[in-house]
Amino acid sequence: MKRLGVVGTFVWDRIWTLEDAARGEPFQSWGGVAYSLASAAATRPDGWEIVPVVKVGSDLQAEARRFLAGLPGVSVGASLVVVPEPNNRVELRYTDSAHRGERLTGGVPGWAWAELEPHTAGLDALYVNFITGFEMELADAEALRRAFGGPLYSDLHSLFLGCPGAGTRQLRTLPEWERWAACFDGVQLNERELGTLGGAGEWTDAAARVLDAGPGLTVVTLGAEGAAYARRAGFPSSPEAWPGLREGVGGAGVEVGSVLPAAPVDGDPTGAGDVWGLAFFCGLLGGLELEAAMRRAHAVAARKLAFRGASGLYGHLAG
Image (cartoon, rainbow, N blue to C red; front, side):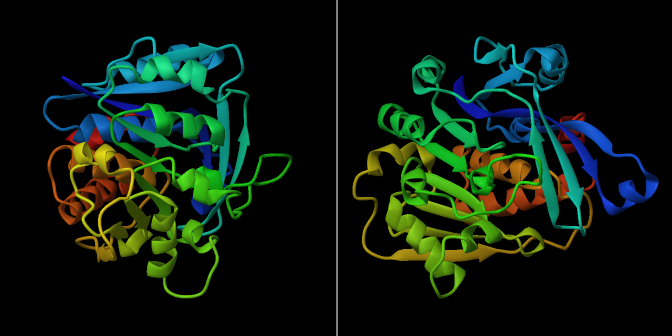
């Protein structure tokens, strides 16, 4: 079996949509990396198993293990690390069907490279999902890049949220974003996050600037408009070829494109980007070409929109 590691953070979500607020009671469920792992279990290629590389607070470790036990193809071992700090919790308040505020509490620490390195041994590919934005520091991400010999893909999402405090986390320009982007072969971010990187011009110009930092592929999720991509000329769809191209990726020029979803779908968008990203990466690992992998990810994310929360999501995606 080949092994896909998934780095992220377990989060317990309290979600307030406009309907929840009117009712006076939030919807509660596992969130964070739980969305990623449910998607990976449902979309993993033949011959691959999923390895969570995740820390969980001792207060919710039993619940986390029960969740993971319900995911076929997910191998739970020493890379699920229990820490004494309280598990992370997030309060999500939607202002409309697509936009929300986010408040993070909890104390689960990130990974220092010295403790992360043993958990990457034996992995064939690694997906790093910045759920809280504190999964690792920049120097540790750079050490990961230097040492890991398999393909590296990351959803940079919460790196673009300012540090938590008494108020809601705010979108920001990621400090030293070029160094962060350079840590991975492929990076994923949404349209708003891409817009913080500055500069005039279309999204294609901003996505090309991300490529200038070092990755070979930039993926931009666009919500109901699907997803777009920019990749260096000659950069292949197959992740197995990515590590050999880390120095002087591809040739001159940038290829751009976009893929619309099959049809607009309404529903709960919480976690949809996490579901989309793992479905996309698993599609590439399974041999799909880039745009075909995007179409598959659209279909999986559309199924997620019809389901609230990550608890029980695998059965819905796989059914």
